[in-house]
Image 1 (cartoon, helix red, strand yellow):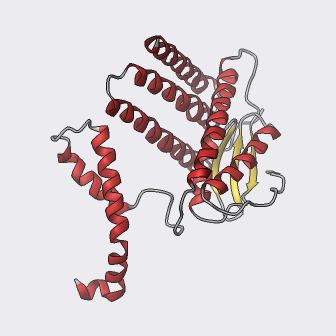
Image 2: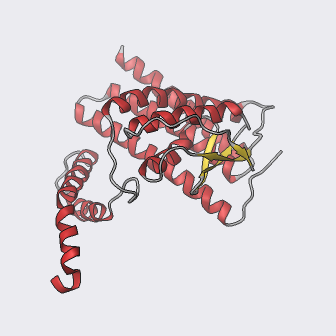
Image 3: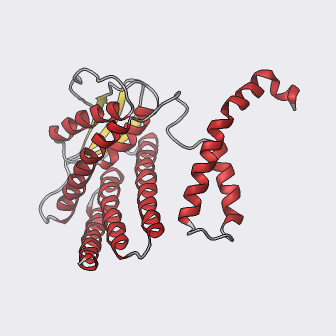
Amino acid sequence: MTQLLGSTGIRRMMADLPALGARLALLAAIWWVLTGGSLSAWVWGVPAVLIAACLRPGLGSGGAWRWSLMGLLRFVPVFAWYNVRGALDVAVLALHPRRRPDPVLLGFPLRLPPGPSRVFMTNLINLLPGTLSTNLTAQGIEIHVLAGSDANIRILTILERRVADLFALPPAPDAPWAAKR
Amino acid sequence: MSALAGVVLIVMGLLFFLSGTVGLLRFPDVFTRLHAISKADTLALGLVCAGLALHADYGALQLKLLLIWLLVIVSGATCSSLIARAALAHGIRPWQR
């Protein structure tokens, strides 16, 4: 086994042990809450937690990252407000007898550095008014906009600043305007 | 009072679920339908969970409802991106007016 892994592999495994322990504890706590503390549920819970901890679910392997607590406190209300607006927009569009979508594909150039913050932003876009991420590229994100509105793109630039703040990244300069495809 | 507020939140959540389902039926392609379910249903579930939390007797159940909502937000947002990307990769072009 030692020969198979090699000294570098063992060192990497040892270095990852605290992080693995933290993931195991977090995932076990999630399982415990979801199953209401049922002992019999651990028959499935133990393998599920072990597999999930080894697969390292999260924001990809783009390097170390951390969240800023103050950034989180500033992010949550802005996200909640735009999430409600997004749901209201789509509800009006769905229920209004004469309104129909007017979709367009856009390229949104990201200012966030490659890594976890970009993956987070890609997922976040789907919860904001009128935008759906269709692909994450080296240049930015391809976005499907439901009603072709510039206001939706402005919301993305606001949230991108909040995401940089959340990940304790330096503020980025103003974004170049989104390019229509 | 909190029981009444809980009922109001659940009814609002059901209305958003209804609007998401109408969007799913009325919108013309996979991309526009993903908008309907990713946004309206996420808020709908949040409202229903908040309403149920007001009716819950103990804190662990409220924590469970919050956790369910957070997990659905994460999985819903990620699945929407994956389905949209797969649709484009398979040559499905977005519907246009």
